[in-house]
Image: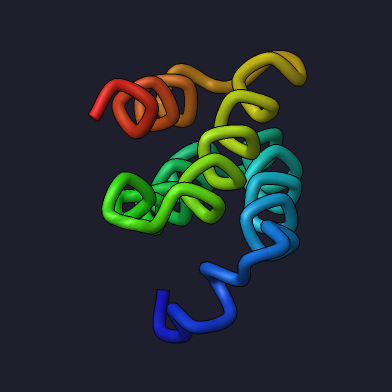
Length: 81
C-alpha cells in the first residue's frame, strides 16, 4: 500500500502477487489476510487496463478456493464497490 506505482503495474503482476499472498496467509491468519486485501480499495479509480487486472485478481481469489469469512467478506466488498 506504500508503493502504489508498483502495486498498480499495468501488467497486473502485483495484483496477482498480492492475492496469492493473501490466499496463503488466509490459511494461518485470516485477519491479516483481510487487512492486506484492503489495499485493493483503489482499484475502481484506475484506468481500464489496470482496473481489469485488479478485478481479475480479486475474482480469481474468490473462485480459487476456500477463503475465511473475513477474507471472503473483504474480497466481496472490494468487488461490489
